Image 1 (cartoon, rainbow, N blue to C red):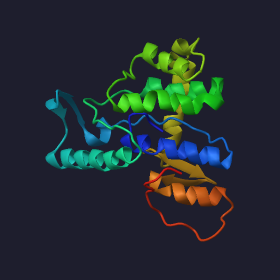
Image 2 (tube, rainbow, N blue to C red):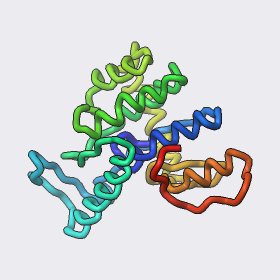
Image 3 (cartoon, rainbow, N blue to C red):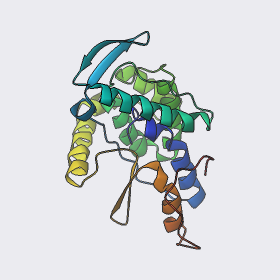
Image 4 (cartoon, rainbow, N blue to C red):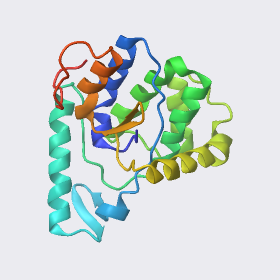
Amino acid sequence: MDIKSPYAFVAYRQILALEKKLGLEFDWRPLTLDIPSYLGSAEKKDGQVISSKARSQHTWNMIKYSYHDARRYAERQGLVLKGTEKIWDSSIVNIGILWAAQKNRKNLSQYFEAVYPAFWRRELNIENTNVVMECLEQAGVNSDGFEDYQADEGREIHDRLSEHFHNNGIYGVPTFVLDGEVLFGREHIPYIRWMLSGCKGEMPDIAYEIAPC
């Protein structure tokens, strides 16, 4: 997962619901996307582009459609999805996923709830360590020691995971790994549910779901 991904945002509640329904604990891991490396970079202010690097009109059109597409699924879940005004470094808030999973696994879902909706309403500075620590506390996860963790051990794990994912063909989010099979995109949730439920009935089609699990 990556907190700055709109497609991960519109999927996280359904993944959490599936986890709860099956009575399982998924192994949630962060992958901080390096968006400028493949989509260029830009910064906006009050809705106007104030700087742009390595972005063609074709790239802008693709990005605009992606947000439009993700926004449709967000609205159907009662979520607000506002396009970001810059490309955020989401590594600190993503390291928070590792911390929450390690310190209080049962409250990991509350951490996602503390960071995801607020970020996509443009109300959360995910590059600020203190802000992320406040989100951890809000989720019922003790944040004592997180500042050092995100700079040292957590950062090392985060970077090592990114290298591991890339070496194994994982570049986007949300991505699922099930029995060694890599499945990229929320549209695989019906299939994952079917697999983890014992493959009962007909195999479902690959499709986005409008309603929550």
